[in-house]
Length: 506
Image 1 (cartoon, rainbow, N blue to C red):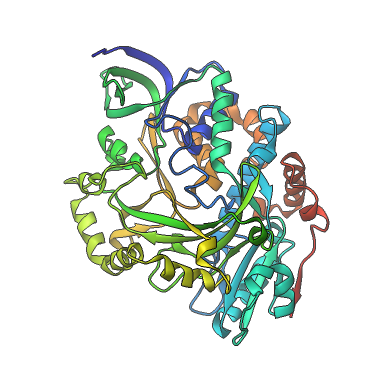
Image 2: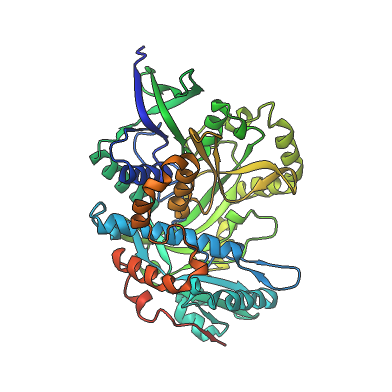
């Protein structure tokens, strides 16, 4: 058993979209820093970032109803929708920089224009959607959104969903042409190919068994080859833990105080997938509905056009479920081994609070294919079982922590946990995850490298022109950024034809 020692400037754990993004940013900011990437699977983008494991929506709040909440007074709170959209615009800017700098050859390999729609049924939900449309469509980030409650217009927008539909209650939809479909698996692999060409050391089939602080202030990782069992020691000044659901265990091993009292709640997912060209051709959109009562926000049903390896297919789901694994290729002991003395009370409180959610998820796991087809027929009334197959999606681990709302509160979203001295950081949580990767990695750079920010600012502004500026407070630059990123990413055309279109068709 070897015990080779390797020293480097930066270690990135996990070869997913987060490490790929942070590595790409750092290589542009400080090309001479040595970076090592450690991944336990045999290739990049195999877990949460993989195109078959996530929704690939390019989350920008254009269609996700859970980002706009109805307040007790009946008004719509759009603050989260604005935040998520702004974060996605940051991703678009960085990807455009990579394309314009010839670091990414063909953006069509990972991003495609696909309209984003919200679809609701019933008087209350139609009223909610109209209020949401009114609140969003006047905002510069959401220009171009249309609303209709006319079944004939909806037939134009979504022929597959309206075919054979009995319209016996009010229905409505919003549509915006500037939506995207993103293949985050392909983007992850593209970024790692780029990093490899920049002499980044990417090591696959490497499991990080332990992380500890050494007397000289470095972080030392005990790394085991999953095939041979050989152990190596890798040390670095800065470590990023971007291992998806596996990040919590690694954060706990680091023993930093900021990682105490945090737990994880795993949620599994399934999609129904249709690859039949005659059916796929009838639907050109990502259409989000409303989550069932008791369902977690990540279980919002949606029917999506997906572009994978230049082929279109339709995804419907996700059907949430429960598995104690923290990764799709994880262990059945993941949940139980994440319970430590410092988070025991938090986890127990979450267990008591989330009995209805757990029961709901276990029931979802037990569903037959026919039951899932019934849910699909809410979207596609004439869907036939033989045209759709079941695909297991990635695991998501939601954060559990004590908040002002009480002990053991389940958090939805992503969160950066970093040591006070900025020497180690971990990303926990799930959706909108990948879509906001650039924004989240910039946050890590700000938190962990404050001493370099002044020197790095010009380059950050070159890569992300809106760096340091709130887009919602500067509407005059929104259209410029939207137009320039659409052009760079090959999205110009339909969405740019009439960028100021904003209308309600009633």
